[in-house]
Image 1: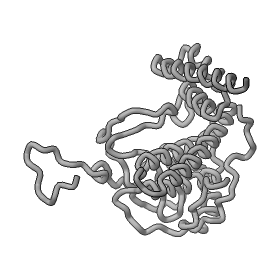
Image 2: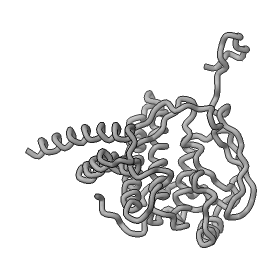
Image 3: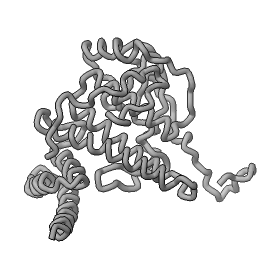
Image 4: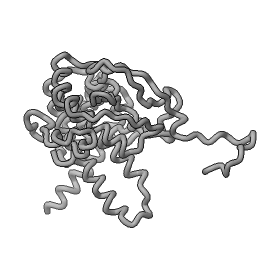
Length: 291
């Protein structure tokens, strides 16, 4: 799996880094100076000001723990990337979307955390919990490195519990988004910026490619909604990822389907039209390069 699960050694799970993601291959279709602010000045909000500790009960080991969680309504959406990655000015919510039990090592995206079957629980206990090193450090905020480690542990859990392709694909997608956010916060003046940025870009592409394969498999075998997304949204996402990896036939077919789908909302159709224009341009450029 290359680097998808690298770094699990710190949790005592280094032996899991070579697990296969999918069972079968899928065809690629300012500081204030120490002085109080004046009455007219707005207080400077720090990342921790948007967070609080939320209590959870682990469905695997039944132990109680707390996890840092973003306060609902405190952050506002600033925009989205072409592949639907949400962007916020105040804090990157992606860093706090993983719920991890510090006792047994069970980790999942927040939307999936509670939903575990008895067989999945048994597999996690045998493969994850048996070797997991309990985590005792409590952090006020998570760095991108902290968050990335939690995402990789979540992906390992998803593989072990034999989660649906859509869940594993969604984890890969969000991990790629997290890596993109990390890249955007790098120091561009650093001597090794170009080298480190390329590494991040390559890793992001690897996760995005695995996300594409997972969503393609899920679309053939699972029902909608999928990871909270309706069919037009999933098709749009697959189309954008397919275009990124030059699978233009797949992207074109799905975009056309969105534009003729009566259940697709106007906003999604507008996005599909934009992608269609990009596809036409990219296909022309590819054909011109062949001549």
